[in-house]
Length: 200
Ligand SMILES: Cc1cc2nc3c(=O)[nH]c(=O)nc-3n(C[C@H](O)[C@H](O)[C@H](O)COP(=O)(O)O)c2cc1C
Image (cartoon, rainbow, N blue to C red; front, side):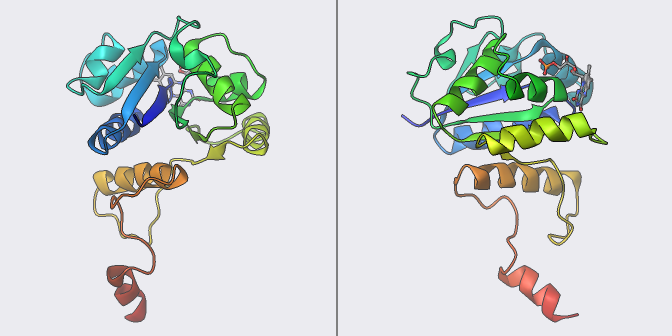
């Protein structure tokens, strides 16, 4: 079974996690999801719906195992757990800092720590603006440890027409980092984009 760990921390951009979970499920992945309490708070605030629990957030998907962030003894906290990798989307600067210094004090952070030690793909979608030198140093540290940093930044060359287009681009770049095939955004060099370029 293809298993992917998805961590959702308390940063803005929770809709990106919502979309990624659904795309991974569509693609036949079994997802192990862990959310921080601030992620649930941000989800309720940003998505216009009360999310009292992670189970509510992943509804109606049935290929998701939800883990409690308090349970540092759950399966994803062990290196023997056979996941293909982990995505943290969005990733708060608090969680970035904790992982960068090996602080494995909740299930999300411990799962990231394990992903690094097992040298599996770890994709981090950090959300803060502007970034301080401390944020940048922590992100550099994680990048040097092998994590892929995918900031939730749009591309204008795809000529997005909606927020949905922008979100699809970001989720698509996360899938690219995991080497998962998709058609969420038009790629540079594809017919549509080439003809736009040729016209100028
Ligand atoms: C609605 C909301 C939005 C937030 N957005 C961000 C953000 O974009 N980036 C960030 O680093 N922290 C953000 N925070 C602060 C974090 O949630 C806070 O630092 C928290 O302790 C992070 O813990 P966690 O990573 O375990 O969720 C936000 C908090 C709230 C309540």
